[in-house]
Length: 374
Image (cartoon, rainbow, N blue to C red; front, side, top):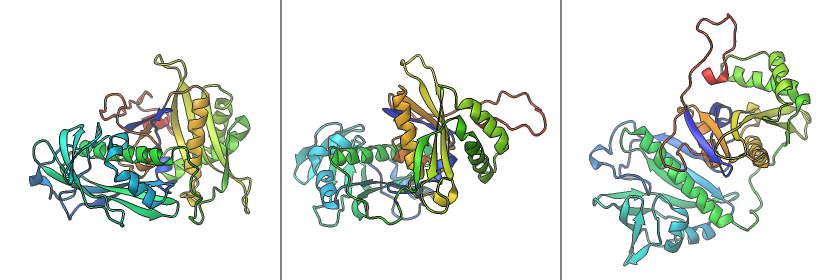
């Protein structure tokens, strides 16, 4: 598993499989097989040896974010070299200097030369970055129309067999695009959504002991779907009833508000809060996040995550943790779109989650293992 962190101000989560397949709306990333162009690289990534850029099996990930502004507004800001240092941390650490048709930029890699394609009406912001060692890399970056405003898309290609470097590059780009989104959406109401079918169909509320039976059924459905050992709905309900009366436990539940199933609970998030010596408030751990399969991509998962973060803040948490299976790319994309990162925000190093089961070897037949030891 990889660890991810969102400081509430930030975060990290455990059961990525729960939401990775749950809520694919708006911002997204996509892995595709490699095979074509070999020179594309994101700003801020390390120089790659051109001799290995045709390696078979390397991946391309299209990292994007939806911004609630017109494509023209987004293009104007993103193409303005004076704004680069305010959002493109992987490329610019200070304001760029103009040198003819190029920019001289102080970057995390040292001083680099950047040359964008000429201004155009198509939202194309592709650019070449010449690194301190003389190597030049090409970075595809586009602004395209979206039903909710504009989508900014950057292609990140894995050009070596270093998976960790590729994930770090993709996370850097995702964070930079989120900063661009924040810069453009600050102090302005979002554009009205024109995308069909995205009206939130559920009410999100904090769960209490009276919701234990419903959460027990949802937990059982969750584990059954992903073929994991699971307590019965009744066993889980009994535990939830005890847990939800505690101050160091938080759960939110999604309930349908209209239609034939109005009043039915269709998703939940479960968090534990634990003390830490680093600040006065607790540390939040998102243990489970689940939405019924037929309601995924409807915004329910996002709404539950947002409510969980809001409640964690209200209870004084400064950080939220999540542990995610490294190969669960859908879940990792979901959490990254919502501000989580598997890069330590203080040191910039990648994070890992190490687990050790503590149950005695050869436990009783039929025992369900703790989710931590799966």
